[in-house]
Every structure is written in C-alpha cells, then in structure tokens.
Image (cartoon, rainbow, N blue to C red):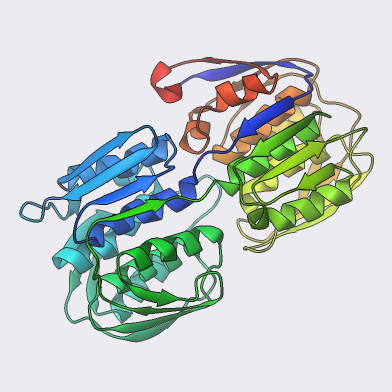
Length: 424
C-alpha cells in the first residue's frame, strides 16, 4: 500500500474545479441495467469505485467504454450473466444495488452479500424487505443473495429510516417493473437521489418526489438511447472548501451546486469563514483561528456525515471547545485517534466528539481508516508543523479524482508514494 508525504504548514490558495459526483454516478450506472438501449453518461469521475462498478457491468456481459469522463454502456441482451462475482461486490457496498435492477430486467440475479464497513454496520435488510414487497422471492445462503421475480407487485414501502442505498435500489427496481405503482415513504432526500430520478425520467419512467420523504414510481421503461450529465460532487466540493479555510487560505471552488451545501455554509459562517456563495462556485477566505461551534450531523438536508471528519479537523485548532454529534454512523470516529497523534485534543462520549481547540498540530505518521477520514488527515497534514506520512491512503482514490494534482494547484506540498495506477 502507498502513502502520502505532506509538508506543512501551508496556506492553500487558488482555484479548484469539482469533479462529477461519485455518489450520483454509482446508482445511475447501476440503473443503466434497466435501459432498453445504450446509455451515455457525462461528467463521471475517474475513481476506483467507478471502475469497480464498470467491472461489474462488464462481468455480466455489458459493453462499457469509459474515456474523458464519458461512459458508454451497451447491454448484450442475448448473453447476460446474472451472477455478479463476489470479488467485485466485496470491494464496494454500492455494488449490491445491481441486484434488484438485474433481477427485474432479466428475471433473476445472484449477488454476494457486501462485507463489513469501517464506519459502521450498514445492513441490507431494508433492501431485501423492499424487494420482497415488489414481488421478488429472495433467498440468502452461503453469503449470496438470490432474487427471482415471481410477480411484479404494487406496494407502499415505508423505510425504517431514510437509507440512501435502499431508496436508490428500490426506486430503480420499481422503475423496471412494467405496470406497477410504488410509493416509498421515509425516503432519503439527498441530491444524488434527485439526480437518479432525472435519469430514470429520461428512460421514460413516471417518477416524482425525489428530494422529499415520499417518492412515487409508475414502473415501465419507454425510451431507448439516453444521455445524462451527472451532478457535481458536493462532498468533494465541501472538502476543498474546508481545506482552504482550515489552512487560513483564500480561494475559489468551482463547478458545484451551492444549494447542495447550505448546511455547510451555515456552519462555516459560525466558525468565522468569509464566504461569497454563488450558484456554481464559492469564494472562501479565513483569517485567524476558527470559532468553536456545535454540529448535529444528520441525513440531508442536515450536516453531512461525509464531511464530519473534515470539519472536525478544522475545529481541532479552534479558539475554544466544539461539539459534534454523529447521528448517521455513530462509530464514525476512527480518525480521532489519528488526529490525536498529531496533537489534537478530542474525546468521544455517547456518539459526541468533544473537540478542545489547540494552537496548532504537529506532523506525524498516521493511518487513513476510510475514504473521508483520509481526506481529513490530509487537511490536518496541511495545517500541521513539519512532515506527516499518511499510510493506507488508497481509500481516498475511491472518492477524490486527481486529489494530489488538485491540492498541488492550491499550493499543497504533497507526494504520493505507491502504486501508480491509483492516481492515473
């Protein structure tokens, strides 16, 4: 495994352009399984997770081309393999979401149960219960889930909590089932779900409500070849905004949808960050130490869990004590011990991080524990005095396109030592 070598402190400054959304691209690529013809997707980021999803489509005999951010997906209706290989599913939880669309389109599918996750247990029972309500027979045996379409059924599905993955999975599966009507209650409301709805509409599916807690789907794909441009990645955008501010820098983050990050803007203004928010870009400037703040992490439109480690890093050098309550993944604090190695003063009590601000961090060897934690440690390394080595960093290439290049353009002193394929 490779590592980052970072020299700090540094004041990040300049312009950075946000890539297409990973979390929008993945469910849309999975939804291409229900298309009647070729799908063309634009603004797709070059990431390990995207490559994994493409590998899955190729493994089931779809023809996929990916070049310059554009994906062409063509099904081979005469030779589709409905068994998805375990070695691909284990790499990424989002790959489980091909089960319903594949079984809906071809009558059956077999997908391995996804493995564990470093940020907490994310069971698939919401997915399976929903598929059964839609008329599938689902069996779990020897680590695999077999789904067989028995009789498409209209249903009202009430999710126990607003799960993004289950919402997307059931939306796409229902969309493929001709003649049924499905209501998903307590649905997740993230912008990526709205983008999936827009894609399904282009396929001719009657669907509305994405972005609210109630989504209505009338199953049936009507259109053939479609083209869709993926929305910008709000988490990547937020990460660069936080990084610039945390280093006392000044810059512009471009190619974002500012409405997707309203909860972040609110928190940053309380911290003392100077912001000029426009529709598709934001100007960021920070002077002096951040003010302490209390943050309640919650599903969209609340403060996103995927920005919790990054904002925590910023608050490690605040002038006072901050509190972060994690309500989405309560075990998402593996980065805390690594930040403490760099001099941060943080305690965890009952799902709440208590961050007592210190005057500065110091460079140290640390380990990336997951995608967003690794991004947070990069920000910490830019703040810290001296050299840091961040190990086990391959996580970050799952969610940040050209991350080294983008940080270097902002003035970051960062070097990646490892397998070259991760940064190509």
